[in-house]
Length: 88
Image (cartoon, rainbow, N blue to C red; front, side, top):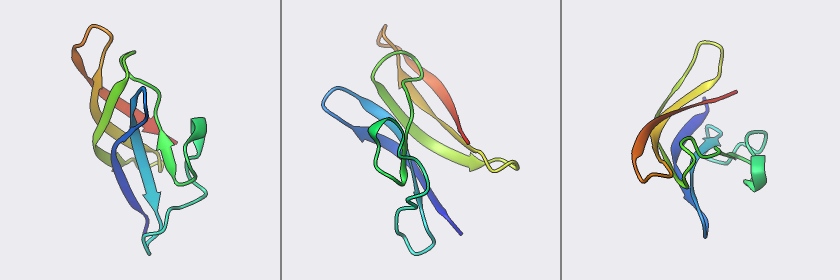
């Protein structure tokens, strides 16, 4: 069974919601993610509220196999909004 982990991944200019997928032995699943310059095994989401500080806090796998991540996103007006991402 796969292992899914969510949180944030930081760069010089942004903190993006990150989703890591690992095989049952703990190795990154290289068939997952790799979008927008992310390494294989990691999915980085675009900013949900237009700012540059997002974090995934919890996740659930839907019946169709998609991954639903809930978290927070800091908007341009410096207000924190709830965020929901769906990863196919």
